[in-house]
Image (tube, rainbow, N blue to C red; front, side, top):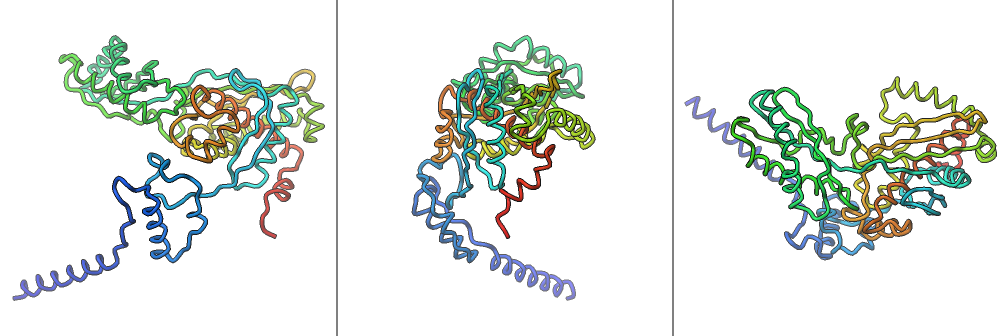
Length: 416
């Protein structure tokens, strides 16, 4: 009898708990498969937000973007966020792809940022503009092959090296744009880690490379010799470090490896910023040591500020700031006290076609710089690099001249 009573009590408690869960369960977001971007469906979601949360969203709802253009960029749209976009510049560029004068759209909510970058651009333009050089540009996917032991893993790697041309052909059956350039090989335990390096045209290419690498791996699985034993693979062994910084990317690059450099005369720096190049060089020595102490991935000042502002404005994948902000600053104080300043950015991941670049405001921002569409990605990368150097120069000068706090007080306060 006690067992029956206990069972009955358990059933009652379970039914009560289930009833509470069903009662408290939030309603599903309105969606219509195959028609999720219809204006009426978007309106239903907007009304749903207000009815379920009690929050009116007139600003989110008031978007000028054509909803039909959103497929592939967002799910369950309810509107668009408005981020202020300022115009910095003009910036004179001395690049291989970006030559001449440019105005730079920057999306940010940080006061002083656009003004500071514009100041750096004026200084760089006075000396003929930053010189930019793209060293290489690849996007990676990193399959790892699981083998029976380390010798079999080494054998898989040697076989892949001998059959690179066939692997390349298999990869490229999935894309008319992506080209497999080379494969890096790393043996660890009984695994064979690889990084497939692709050129990707005007696209950033992460998805393109994933699909191409998968085709290459499938060909490998079908053609590996039986004497290499049982082999399986995982499409990403994580050493492509997608959306994460890594030292491997600093060494081998992910996206574009670009160097930007300029020589700043002491008299010009004093006239424009009241900062002496000798003091700036000395301060950089101190901050280099501080950066080493802290373990930073960029020994410069604030590359992420300019990169993020341009990425958001131009429809880049903003998560790629995690990789793209890495940088290697190098300064020389010349005998005449002129300052040579270079910045190597090893992982700028940018596109002028695909992704978010074709959306309304993002396309307009790219068009302001003549960077939208085919054949423009190298120009955009160089402009990003020039912009970053302008920001490094201006903020460093503000710190040296003891104007950093004052500039934020003047331009960055929106409360009394």
